[in-house]
Image (cartoon, rainbow, N blue to C red; front, top):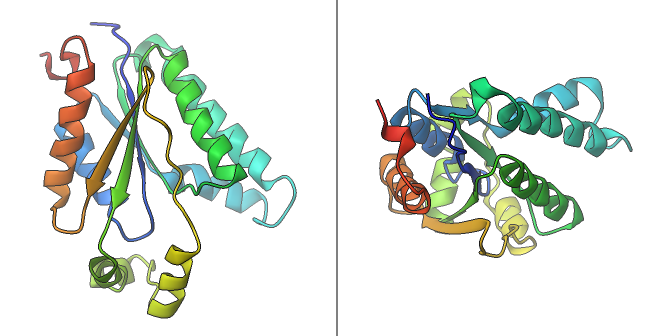
Length: 200
């Protein structure tokens, strides 16, 4: 089995942009080497232990991420996996620090960070946020004015492209999750010296 380091794929986007759906499609394409760690797997354990307004909350979140990052790059059994993370981080102090952790994790594993930013049309995004699927999962946010004020008052975090970071902008307004996943995969394959994820 090859031990070639794999890049980390991190999908960052606002609520309703389809992060989880795209990540699941990408994981299926990369099967059996794809491994999805969506944001709620990292958030929910912290929420159980501490309320979000408590001083130690962000430190707990960081510790959970750190444990996952260490395991993903520190064991022979995980070195062939392609880890896909979903997240929603803004360009504030917390978001900037969190994004730096992903870069450090990719560096520790000897790979690159594929930083995917999901762009969207506001009208399409509003439709998704009030969709039946999100209602079924209890993820409904149905106040358009509140959402628009949030979008206007925030800016999603963007890492600068470089030797260790590949930035991929994907407009999901008119793309299916499958199309978005394929676009991300194209970038991943381009930065690998070979294509171990497609090896038998």
